[in-house]
Image: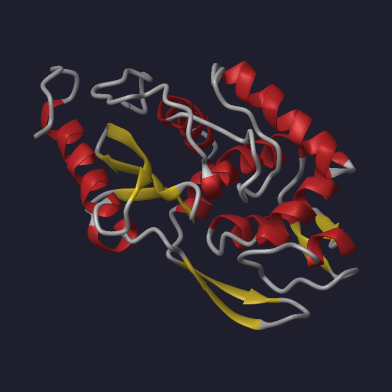
Length: 238
């Protein structure tokens, strides 16, 4: 997808419903940034500390900035940070999920259904490659989101641990012009990647779902290369 125009340059099964894994957190961040000041403080609820999968080892009652929690969610893919942000933004995870689905519909992501803010497997939580491209284009238009997902590492300090979050998006290290955005991986979803890159005025988004660790990175690079090489000419990438 051309980030500037929303034009889809190449697609294969763009409307196939698949599990999104942690690419769900793109939409979570969109809703948070729309409703919360990044400098505001959020209190970690007990519910967040019970999150499974990847976490930032948050402790109930500690107060962190919304911005720090966004880094935890988007760079560290921390599920406890996602739940803390959901509760802080909407008062409950259920209400936050409703906001997520409403936001997706308003942007034209009609085939996505969100059941949690983390992307952890839940029957019926589905998206499509086209919907993720649409959501990512909207998210990247926010400079706060763009700054976070383009950050390679972030110093972390909280009650549970101190250290450094490292962005799991390998393309930030190896692909010229890479600017984000989010990885995801579960047994159900396979390896998922939303990648974006910008060079000069040109900017493109590539989405790959239900892939393998061996091919997801090279396939994303191939699609981005195609965007920069051909623009809207309509030729198929090899």
